Image 1: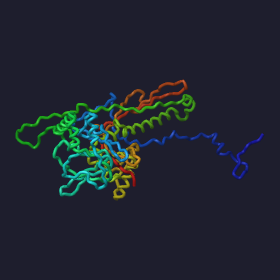
Image 2: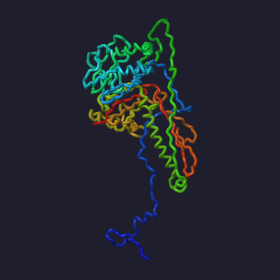
Image 3: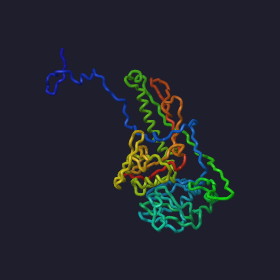
Image 4: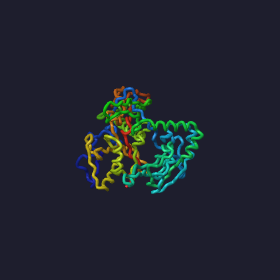
Length: 465
């Protein structure tokens, strides 16, 4: 009988049991399955969650006369830009106008105008006789200060527009100058071309008349119907009568769902369940993936996502490119009680570089046991679900949260059948002919912006050095 022995490095007979052989008798210490795709998911942590028992959440607001202020989309082929006719409804003047032929006629009368850095598109004091759409590039709106100096009123970029309201009022002049920061393309529609189309369309003339009428109704700076009040009076004057009007068709949010079917073979669940519960570990990782998808949808979904549903007036472009303290100050100034910034980690790094260049050292604050960077006392939370374009451009969000603050809220329903976590259920679906155990894992959620200034977006944030 021959006994095999393991050779030592020197070729000599071993004097003790090798570690490789000894491991056959040892118990291995092991971890639970690890998952690289788990992120901090700050948005899910800081959003106040509202119980939506009926599956639908209705946001009632005061009646508002403000008409559409969205972004216009274009087709750009070989350097030639063309406005998509239906996108003209994003202009306040044409919001709700649905005559496709007239919109196509208007779109066909836009003239392309290319501009270079420093070019003046319109000049303050000159007659305002055109509507201008920015198809590509970035421009600055410049006004005149109290002592005749130039002041920057804002920055416009791809999809922005100006001048459509002036088409309604004859004899108006530009109250600002628009100067190009970069090279770009603008599409221009003259007053004469607009009136030419209106001459042949009774529907367009009636729509413009209704728009002019709505502009004349009493409203506050937010476009809401006014509440008539009296103050500073003495004696016994007749006090104004008033009432608070509501929107007739308020927006409703239905709960969205993310689902998957988890399958585990019965043999695995029966035989390989010690020391770790195989079904439990499979379920844990599946729930983590669903929560990651949930946060992605809360940011990017077209129906209820924060990026797509932020009000146009609450969107600000960076003045130079990278996010600077000035940019964050400007977006903070547009709302009350800002509570959180939400930014991609690369955007936070870009902001840090700008602060370092200026010799500024932002403070840190503690949230949920973690120290995060803050600006003006508002924490900047990382969120890798905010997209970055191929050109290295992203966005930074700032928000106020909670129903009591008229802010942003998360929506879910708790107490659902087979609930595993709040708003998430795990239902056993049975065993099929291949002895597979099946579990339906469902997460129900949505988000609502209660008033427009609850959420702001800093756009065109460049990440390059």
